[in-house]
Amino acid sequence: MKKQLIALIFAVLPVATFAAGGDGYPLDHMEPNVANKASLQDGLNTYMNYCKGCHATQFQRYERVADDLGIPHGLFMENIVFNDATRIGDLMTNPMRADESKAWFGVTPPDLTLVARVRGADWLYTYLRTFYVDSKRPWGLNNKVFPDVAMPHVLAELQGLQADSCAGGDTTERDILTGEKLCGFNLVEKGSQTTDEYDRTVYNLVNFLVYAAEPMQLERKRIGVWVLLFLLVLLVPAYLLKKEYWKDIH
Image 1: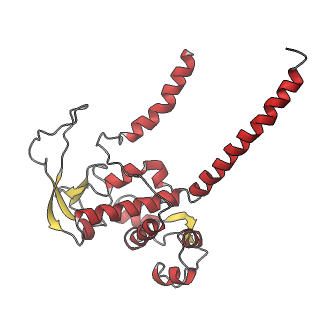
Image 2 (image 1 turned 60 degrees about the horizontal axis):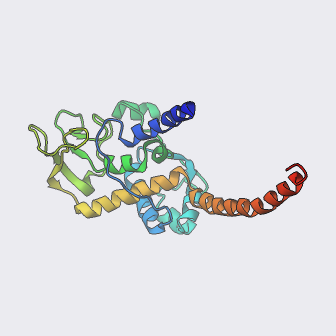
């Protein structure tokens, strides 16, 4: 029993550590809904316009995305994919060369196909909403969740620019468990969206990335229900058969 308890603790520990955000910054929760096609379509639009220039989702195909999101192929190619050389059956790769991107950004932008599985939806949702002005950084911006990140704030025109309210001073707001400062942000330059609109845009983008990480998740859950029902029905004849085989022994 003791060995089982220790094994359980070590199994849960990485999940708990990851959920805490790694660097201790409190993450905002979001509940993905990959059944919401309108959300996924908006997230796809944001991804293609603001993320695809540097990142790829090279394990995903345009055709699969169009079919899953209910977008006709012709409409998809006309409004989502702007490269005439790209075909609907192509993988969602990125033409940017790794050596060039590393020279520009210091690191090669990672593929985003599985980023929602690796980082988690809460991490992505909080990360994309916590860029703040920092004159010491090359792009003039930093991030609370990923300090000194090399990525520029590509959604700045939507969110605007915000300053860390704790910069240069202390705050009386602290986490009741860790004592860590809970810093907020002050908007110093407006973007094209309100705070609520930007939060919705980020939600839809992360929702799309959650879908991209596992396009079959709805089908997996649907099949899983039928599998459990089948096993439940199978339990009856299996139990009766067991009784029949063992009736002369007991």
